[in-house]
Amino acid sequence: MSEKTIYDTLSQAEYERHAEESYLKMSDGSQLKILRTYAKEETSNGHTIFVIPAFGSIILGWDELLIEAMQDFDVVYFESREKGSSKLVKKAKMDMEIYSEDMKETIRQLKLEENKLITLASSSSVPIIGYTIAYKNLQPKLTVLVGPIMKIPIPTIIRLMALFLPTFFVNLIRKLSFIWIKRKRTATPEQAAKYIRAGKEADPKKWKRGLGYFGTATYEKIYPLIDTKVLVIDESEDKMHETEITREIASLIPNAELIDLKTNKNTHSKPIVDTIREFIQRSKT
Image (cartoon, rainbow, N blue to C red; front, side):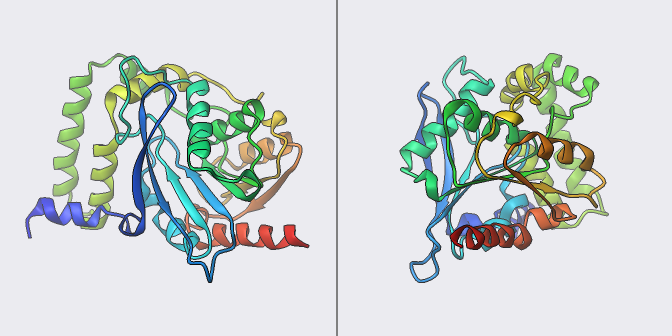
């Protein structure tokens, strides 16, 4: 087996082998990719989990959660317009308004019932769901916010480099990074495959345009306007996570419940799905 084939095989998520892939046309003519599965009739709980991964997040990081959730939930995995999979029209907008419209349009086209809908976001995708609920009258049964943010934590020097370096230079750095990752002896093939796929799916042109808006925006005014039931998920043992911000955001949302799942691993696998299941059971009583 060739090196390319090895990495391509390892970089496929198990969920992708089960899911239906489709592209939905948005109001501006751009097309966005979704992956969708349906729970078996005998195990279905009648609810849909709608996942919006963070900017730069790839499906390999969500695979365990998706595989667990598809046992009794219908699942929609939504790839927003900065992802490499999107097919954008020329001069496509990359601001909060269009991201929110994309989410609403996707829910409408898929004919998802809001009273049976669980929306789930993490990090930089949290404000998108928050904005959509606050300003677009989306009323899901439950919203799950993992590691919510006040602003995207991008160091100023990186943001400026991304905005002002020519795209061809960014692409050159990306290709050299692939070579380095493959030759790095301390990385397992599985780790390398994940990093390589993340790099391949990062589109420099889309990121440059998106950072022009999202790289400077702040979101503290959105959270008090969310008027649906929310689970705010903390990762208090994760060194990359700012638990103080998570707890502050939970305090700003009127109908929020703060749950600490301790680790990033738990928020991307079975424990968070079990947390959602427990909420559904509680809501029946």
